[in-house]
Image (cartoon, rainbow, N blue to C red):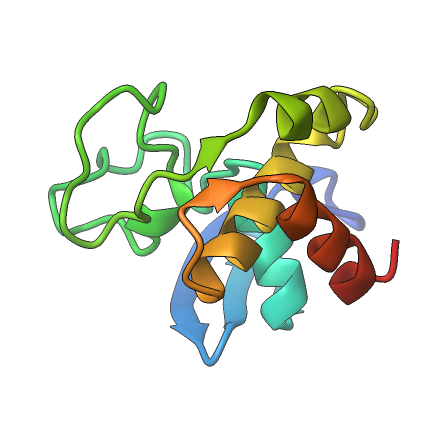
Length: 144
């Protein structure tokens, strides 16, 4: 996704990124041709949605995860999930067969976001396994 300056039809350049503060994310873009600026501010829920989609915030040529220069290393997917747990990364959550079957009923285009949200919900409650009880509680919590 790119932001275009409407008057100039020029791709905007990333100017500043303020890491999530209590969940809010702030990103400022500006037009290199006319100087027009645009800011994006997300609330905690919107930031979580961005994270769950695996979106990387910043220019395409930004340094890779792990070098300390990326403003949102937590928003870059850690990989295929087969790596061992590392400090600072979420603890892996197991899924029961029944929970996986219910997850498969969620439309494919939102399934990754739903899975991430459900896993966070489980972790926040001290559960390291998603079962039907956790799914029911998450469904009630998210109002689904």
